Amino acid sequence: MSDTTRLTMAQAVVRFLANQHVERDGERQRFFAGMWGIFGHGNVAGIGQALEEHRDELRYFRPQNEQGMVHASIAYAKMNNRLRTFACTSSIGPGATNMITGAATATVNRLPVLLLPGDVFASRRPDPVLQQLEYPLSLDVSVNDAFRPVSRFWDRIERPEQILASLPEAMRVLTDQAETGAVTIALPQDVQTEAYDYPTRFFAPATYKIVRQVPAPEALADAVDLLRRAEKPLIVCGGGVIYSAATAALADFADGLGIPVVETQAGKGALPWNHPWNAGPVGSNGGLAANRLARDADLVIAVGTRLSDFTTASHTAFQNPEVRFLSINVSSRDAHKMGALPMVCDAREGLNALAVAARQAGVRTAPAYGDLVETLKAEWDAVVDDLRRPTEPAHLSQANAIGIVNEAAGPRDVVVCAAGGMPGDLLKLWRPVDPKSYHLEYGFSCMGYEIAGALGVKMADPSREVFVMVGDGSYLMLHTELVTAVQEGLKLIVVLIDNGGFQCIRGLQESCGSPAFGNELRFRDRETGLLNGPYVPIDFAKNAESLGVMALRATSESDLRQALLRAKNADRSVLIDVKVDPNRRVPGFESWWDVPVAEVSGRAGVREARAGYIEKRAAERFFR
Image (cartoon, rainbow, N blue to C red; front, side):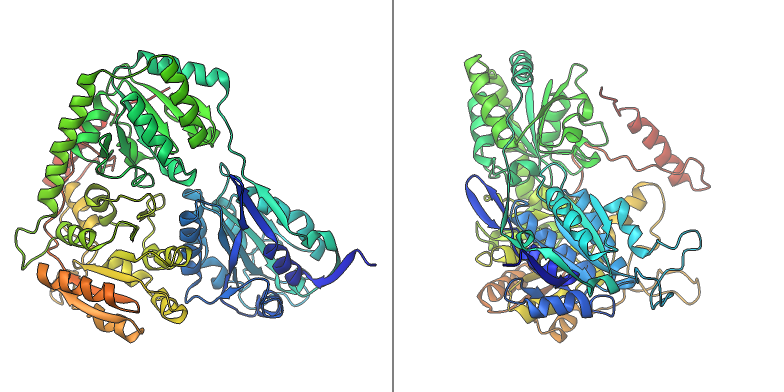
């Protein structure tokens, strides 16, 4: 009996991926839900042929754009707590480079995805081939080398047997909760079709067990000592809390020790918005309660967060001169940030162990601290109520639209958003009660993620209604995965906020002392030569309708409420084109974000903004 199986390299890749599994807490499941792909000469006769022949082993999905399929994959992975994902195949050249933005989005957000771009001939016999980059200093460079800085693991297969080493290493990285991100394996088009006698055991079902790392006893003892001495501790909740299914542990920890929790974009929803210890969002896009608690905290417990500049308000959020940091994170790199005492462990295991040890040590904040949290939380909730409430029902603001959509959504329904000003407004104003009902990509702030990401969310859990909140500028960048939703029979409710362009950046521009320039979607004025004419009137409803989606329009509160009701009752994807006032914005709340202002300028507004910038920058702290 032969112990080898003769397959092409591409066929072997497909069969291997179909047999990979992960297991956590005793639950085992397939790691790859399928493979997305757009075919061209660089992969159609290799991976394409293999997917068709082995279609019963690994399901194929056809997107409209290579970047979109990567976004859908990582959104799917996020909904599945990094325990499942997709592979993505492309042809060589632009098909491959279209995936680079998606790769960066995955790696920045620590979300697994496997990218299999086609590559030029390993044999080099027909060089240069169509779409080949002729790099004069080295013949082994192709456009796929551009994936190196945005991938957690990168390889190029130049002999069919090399996948025996490459694919297991790819799986190690993809399933490592601390190291995961985009994995790129470039597949030369000739090698994809070459056969090899692979060991049959290479295709046997394999299971990667996700082990929950427990904290080291020494780190646990030091952490308890920090807690014992703290009077105003504060928990910063990141995405790692949700990925590790640690939401119940977080609630028990906060309740048991009397410690308020503040949220990051990735961590929002870990506690229901109305939980008594949930003080709301923190940082540059944070709220009154969280930012005031952060300002005075003497101990910051960072759980599952990488402490980005939006969370730390560019290192200005924590102003107590005696503040210390304790970080619970599976990533050693993240756990050591801000000079923290590192507890390198799984979030759930770390919170549970620390809660037990702290209770044994008699740790509990004073009642007065709880009273302060209650007062601040009530004040913040009232502010949110005011911002969400329409004051001019016939003319909506973005905040009004967010509140109305939130009220229409069910407790398990999901809101999806990514870049621009809307993520900050959603962080402040959306009120989730389920850990998976708030899905924001803000690590890379990638415009175009929204609809493709929502597709992945819906594929991960079809039982949930998925609301896409997207600005008109981001919609124009990448909306074609609406066609994929139609093709797959998946329902999305897209709420398109039309405010005439990139109003978020316009606001940032004006805060830096410059007049509005280049951000609004306006006609060019023939006399001045500037883009300051009337707004370009785009009929987004007609555009969506042409793609096979039900289209509705709303300009008032009643319009939007009725449209949402129709959308929820629809049996297919719906787009609601909502016109809002571009000049009514949600303010900031006692926080700051470091965006440098020009040091010299002929404009008085810029000089004034620079002076304010220097003053604010003085509050930035170095923690070590």
